[in-house]
Image (cartoon, rainbow, N blue to C red; front, side):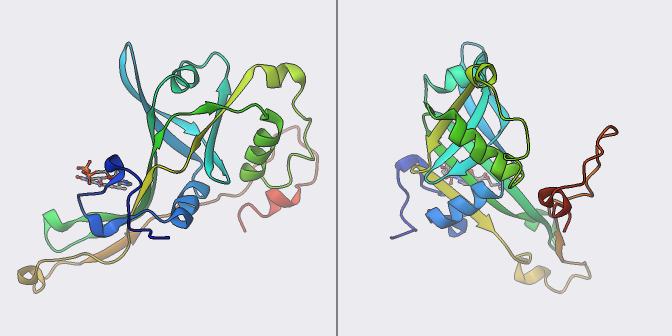
Length: 211
Ligand SMILES: Cc1cc2nc3c(=O)[nH]c(=O)nc-3n(C[C@H](O)[C@H](O)[C@H](O)COP(=O)(O)OP(=O)(O)OC[C@H]3O[C@@H](n4cnc5c(N)ncnc54)[C@H](O)[C@@H]3O)c2cc1C
């Protein structure tokens, strides 16, 4: 597979094209590392960009919400743009205008479609959040499933951009007595905090959270 060829005209990265990739494996890794995506769509009140939880199964990104969600209803009627961004570092250059960030980002275009098999897909969501938890909790009942909409969008029309590395200073700035380098950033997992009434021993997915 040629991973340098964009799947469509609107996924052709033009600015800093050396950071672009159309590699499905990279796209999957960016989606799998995300807890949320941002979805841009337009309705009678203008254009909105809304954060929402997401997960991946195979070649699709999934979202869910209440049947009454304005966003979910809109997304079945029009194309949209989904973005995911991970900031990996602040890149400090010797000159102000060469500062940048290290990152992994993805932009996905298409239209969300209704998912009929809500149980399987929502169980996969739980597995994404906390592997093994689905078997330990009270399962969703018919009323809860009936009130919930699950949508998915194909990961076929997408672009990724990644930057990783030190600052790119201009040659004439290299002699400046200015600290240059990267301030790494990462999402941290904290120590689990049991609910006040919880007397149950922490299961493996909780014990492993901060490990
Ligand atoms: C953490 C972070 C911080 C950034 N900060 C800035 C900033 O301060 N100023 C700035 O100008 N740019 C910044 N960028 C880059 C920005 O995302 C755009 O790539 C850039 O602004 C060019 O946009 P464009 O629409 O002109 O690009 P074009 O190259 O014309 O975009 C064409 C197509 O490429 C794809 N594409 C564009 N950007 C991305 C992306 N980031 N990820 C995946 N696909 C993409 C889309 O499909 C888009 O339609 C940042 C990116 C990240 C991830």
